[in-house]
Length: 340
Image (cartoon, rainbow, N blue to C red; front, top):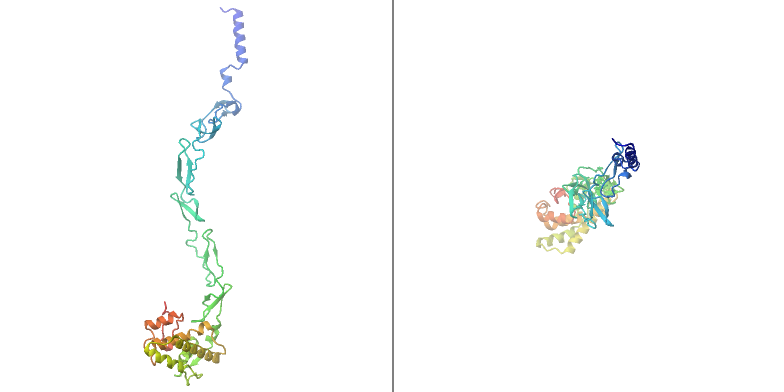
């Protein structure tokens, strides 16, 4: 039997232990996460509010920590030397995810998801298999405003359309035919000054045939070669110059200055005749074409009827090289597209 004084001593010691916090149940309890601090940068300090119990799971690998006063990295809950310090894994490819492996300091790359945005030489791009490809935002977009006096532009960066005006003076379809194209002005196609002249031009040639518009101008320039007294109006023509060119054309050795004089005469005769009929001449850019055409047909193609070989390669080349493809209906009706 235990004496009373022994029981008293045992109770006293047990009470002192309890007061000193030596109870097992008391040591496992916490109020906040601070009560669970294990002094390890590489573990999380967690207090479960439901049970008041502490836990210290490892931090995510790669978390920075204090490695003996230097920057370290957490690996499996322990602070290790940071092998990725000063390692640059950037491969300058928008379509890869670049990372340094903290365990050995090596670089690892993973392709970004296909369709991710990237920079394609300053243009919007899309990642495909880890490579940046042109997004081709303008593919399939029609920016046409059906105005030949504007440019139809799709911005490859935004896929938006714009229609800035072309340069003033650019030819457009405002005219009715050869030499009478309209001219663009402020994004609008204005009528050529030659348009109205051709519209009001008619001429009866030396055979009594009525010609109108561009056909009339061609007939006039043809009759201007040797002149015509029976046409309306009569034409003095360029007979003297034409005779000289025909004579040297037979030998195939016409001096350039002789041909140029003949061309000038044809242009002047054509312009004066048109001005007589309509009241105004054609513009120089249009009238100048009649001279080379007439000279070409005289020196390369013409016979007395101007109908034998106007479609020969040399004659076509002559007209096309001059940049004046006339159809010359009076000279066998050469096609409009002979220079294509």
